[in-house]
Length: 182
Image (cartoon, rainbow, N blue to C red; front, top):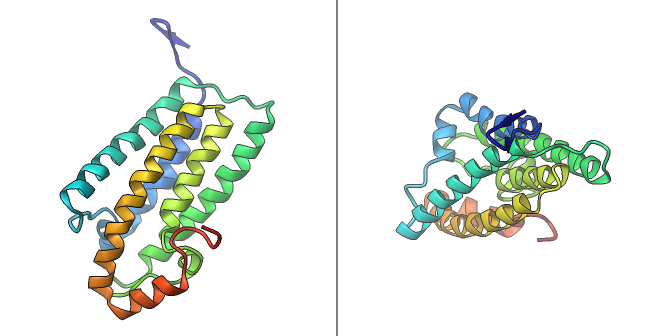
C-alpha cells in the first residue's frame, strides 16, 4: 500500500508484537508497574537520557511500519528465533518483577541470571526485529539505546543500594548486571 510515495510494509506486525510484549504486561503490574517506570531517582542527565531513550523506543515502534518482512531469508529465521526467545524471557522477567513485594530486592526467576533481564530481553527482541526486517538502522538505534540504558542502570543501581541496602549489595555481587558472560 502506498500513501504519496511512502510505502507501508508488513513490518508493523513485528512492531505491534514488540509493543505488546514490552508494555502490555505493565497493565497487570499494579504498583510494581509504577515502580518500573519511576525515574525520580535519576539525575538531570539521567532524566534527559530517559527521555531520549523513550523517543528512540517510539522510533523503534514506528519505523518498522515502513519495512517489509523477508520471509525467505536466513536472517528472518535467525531473527525470529531471537525475537521469540527474548519475548518469552521478557514476559517471564515482568512476572518476576511484578510478583516481588515492593520492599524487597527482585532476585527470583530471570533475576537469578541478570540484574536487568527486562532491559536485556526487550533489547534482544529489538535485535531480532532488526534481523527479521534486514534493518541496520534498527540495529544502530538499539546500540545507542543500549548505551543510554547502561547509563540509567548505573544510576538505578545506586538508588537500589540506598533503598534495599545489604540485600541489594549481596544480589549485585552474585548476579551479573546483564548476562553471565557480560
